[in-house]
Length: 183
Image (cartoon, rainbow, N blue to C red; front, side, top):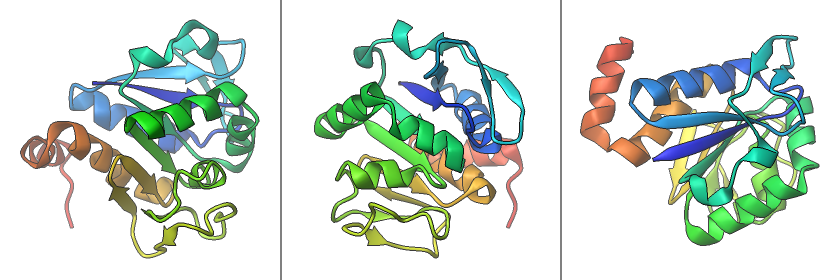
């Protein structure tokens, strides 16, 4: 399995890095893909992350799933990218894994991907999600091939939900033990 995690200027760095870290520890391939014309992308807190690829260099067919980190400005920038929106609609049709955290589920909502699906997001970031079955009490929710997460504080749960879809519960339990996750 291989995922593209899209980086747009203003992305929430914790959501991008924690998700990437957890998935790579689980031996899941993740490419950090810049939606700009530069590999270096500046996050919402002015942290510069170097992507692995530019979106113009990758192909939809190379990925089994797509991950959208939040961050208000980052989400606004992702939402302006017609190629990303096209890929998300195609991935939904193909039932590839689509994961969005924080404010990013709004993009899925606007595309109709969350219609009649249980979903969560950052509190107050629900524009376009009116047709979803919204749940503001969960850190992460998996509904079929769609995974949503609430915030940077729930990113570990979000990343483990993605890993669970790929690896299954036994391997995710081992991964949780490796990460020393405690209640």
